[in-house]
Each structure stands twice: as structure tokens, then as C-alpha cells.
Image (cartoon, rainbow over all chains, first blue to last red; front, side):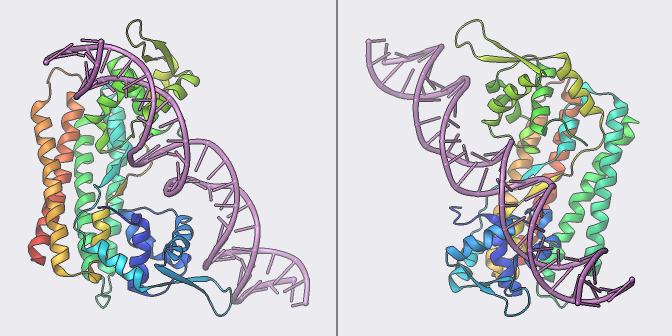
Length: 177
Length: 177
DNA sequence: TAACCTATAGTCTCACTGAGACGGTATCGA
DNA sequence: TCGATACCGTCTCAGTGAGACTATAGGTTA
């Protein structure tokens, strides 16, 4: 767990390893479809990490040949090795959740049942939306993609995760009604 | 959702509202038993937030009368009002999760099945520990405490949450074995 | 061909946070 | 009275988050 790099940096390495050389903007697009649900990365970070990784010799930077001459980052052998070392390590720092709604729920003894019910309904709706979005993405997966197996697993986990919260908040809404 | 304060500041207000005047150190103790699972707060933050809230007139600061003369923070009427406004608002910013293990799983097509299995076993064990810890806390709850109702709910949610991940990783471990 | 529009792409800044090293203070046993 | 240990609090500094801001490309219209 002596991590050489930050998680977002490994994401950059991983995406480039899988999909080939990319610009920060392309990285941003990839992340929006996948990783952001369990590791949010603000877009500005994707302009900070690749140059840093290039300094470390894990990526190399080249300019596009035509047009805008955007900065395209390529994986080096050292980068591929760093990525595989990370993947081979079964440990990782513990998951963290930040859920403001649960914070409010913590103090429900200071609030009214009506307020709790309103909170619960809002949250149930939100988690239902997430679950539906995941189901949609699952249906849209391209079976030819080499990453489909892991995507499927992650989406199924996401659906069960969200459904768990839907059930929780719906029950609570019913009880507080 | 136009939040006047940060979530951690509302936690400070809430804990003082429920338990009476507290020092930053006492806040730290309270948070370790409850809130840190869905809203981690580094301890140094608990020395930064209360003075800030005092500047805003939401807390007042007094020194202990004896001994170490620690800084004890009391809730003001304005503080109580701010807390209730927050509790009465059913919206909140969306939950965020940061789970490095899922990040590794994202790139399993670049790893070996043995590595995936090792990761899965490690993660299953970790989540099982969390689930057990929650079950223990649930058993230890003091029914006389006014916050028991919300604590029970939150712990039950936590148990289901962790169990979900235990199941996920165990299945994956079995498949990759 | 200039003016404009929209999507695309990237930069910048600033307050804040996270992590943990570090420093003091009370308590207690030997 | 010394040292050990737990308790308590401060400090620092790189890194992050949020989003305003700037810039470029490729149309479309006039």
C-alpha cells in the first residue's frame, strides 16, 4: 500500500493502457462514462496529472500533428510497469463515502417527522434515478469491448448498491409519513 | 441547497445541539463513534470549524473554569436556527464514494485472474469486518439515548451496505479462483 | 469574408483540505 | 521526582476542488 502515485494517476495510466494515447480532454470523456461513480476526478486534475506522470517518465507527451496540436500522452514501459505493480497489489486504502443526506438523518431527533419524510422521498428518488441510469448503461454495453466483463460487474454492483439505498429511504419515508 | 455552511460545520452544530457544549477534542470522540463512516472529518478540521462558527455568531467560546482551560463551544440561538434550517431542507448534494478497490477492478482486463481473486478476497474480508463492527455497535446501543432510533436505522443501513459488498467480492473471488 | 455561434478544449486562481508531524499538558505508577 | 503514557492542540505545506475564464475550430449566415 506504499503507493507511488495517487489513484487518479493510476486511472490515467489505466485508461491510456487500455485505449491508447489520449489527450486530457479525451480522458475526461472516458471517465464520465465509467470511473466517476466510485472515484470522482475534477476535470482540471486531468490536466495536472499527465504532465506530472510525464516528469516521472511514466508517460511521454507529443503534440498532435495537425489542427490544434493538442497534447497527446503515450504510455511508456515504465508506466506500464507501474500500472501492473499497482494492479498486482491486492491491498488498497479503505473506501470512503460522503453522504450529506445521512448526515441529516443523524440528527433527525432534532427534526420533525415531516422533515424526515421529505428528505427520505427526495433521496429515494435520487437513488432510483442512479439505479435506472446504471440499468440503461448495462443494456447499452458493447459485448465486443474487452472491458465489458468488468463493466458488467461494476454496473451490477452499482445497481444493487443504489437499490439498497432506494429501499432504505422508501421504508423510512413510509414510516415517517 | 444554497448551503451557508459546510457539512462538517453542520455536524459540529448538531453534536453540540444534541450533547451540550463541547471542546474540539470531545467532538472528535463523538464523530469516531458515528458520523465518520459517511462523512469523514480529519481531526484538525474540528479545531478549525468551531472558531469559524463562533466568528459567524453560531457558537460562543468559553474557557473551562479549571485545569487545562480548554476551549468549550456553546450553541447560540442563531446556531440552532441555522441547524434547523439545514435539517428542514430535504435536498442535499449527491453522495460521493471513493473506492480504490473498484478502481483496480475497472482495469482487470489488464490483470491476471489470480490478481483479481486476491483483490476480491482482501476486499471481502475488509467489508466483513465493517459489517461485524456495525452489528456489534447495534447490539451495544443504549435504548435510553434519544438518538437511538436514528442510530439503529443508520447501523442497519451500514450493515446492508457492507453485506452487499461482501457478497459482491465473495462471488468475484469464487469466479476468479 | 466577416461576423457570429456553438461545441470543444484548456488554463488559472484561490481558499480550503488532508495528512500527519510536532509540541505541550495532565495523570499516574514506581 | 522521574519517566511513561495518554490526552489535547497547533502547525505546515503540498495537493485538491470549484468554477470562472480564455482560447480554438468548424460551421452558418449575411
